[in-house]
Image (cartoon, rainbow, N blue to C red; front, side):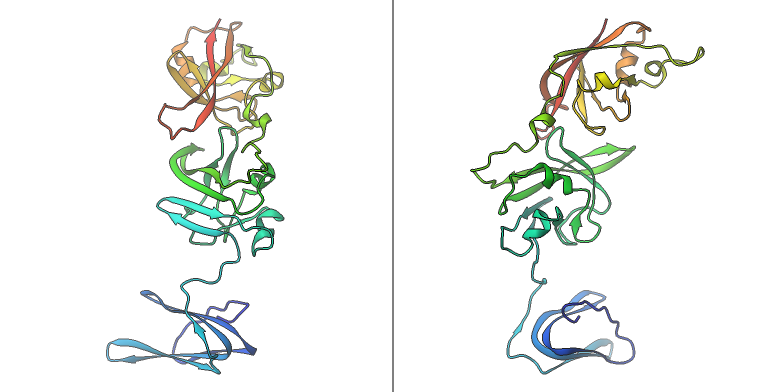
Length: 317
């Protein structure tokens, strides 16, 4: 209740009071079973006393303020100290403060995006996609800011303040066998004097300059072992071959076998998501090669809100 600290007190049998060391601003929020009953900001207040009681079947209360300032301001929310946050439908718009404005140092110096507790983001972790290769997997709102999101500001030095980050709710994505909520992030109002791509050029294109890569199908380790591409549908990718594909262990991209698309990634030395491909090519054998060729970026199904992925054609020779 008292400024600058907050105190949560409960009415029971008697009155409760808060006395400040000196006349100060007090933000009083009285919450009942039906929600917030009183939400007001009082200036120049020395003490506040709240008393409850009953009148028939109704619960009534009394608030005493002494001395009361000449002017009492009633607000639905506390004054904002960070970015301006607006919830529009299922989307969230966050406008970054400019230099000199309150909250500028939070995102610019500390790389923390303060959104408050009621910005509209889901509970738990969710995914934020800036581009096909710039993906933040484990974002959440632990208190009033987005965690696991500081890398976004490090990746976008062109942000000066005043821009609006638009988090658009899209179809959820599967992570660890579970569907996580997902947002596409776009930047609106970036400075014309600093036209920097939303993602670094090295992140938008594979490292290798070659257009094709041939990966040999290897025998399993051990005499009785079954190759991983036979029983698990994953393809071993060596470090020298890894640079051909988009960077990042969580980065998803498309592998196209004719008209069939496979959404894959390379989490740890192997390419997952190829089970369907190897089921379609069950006659593949050790010593043959899986040939990847870089082709034009595509959407996952042609309808996925325009979000494109790096795409490769594949065949076995």
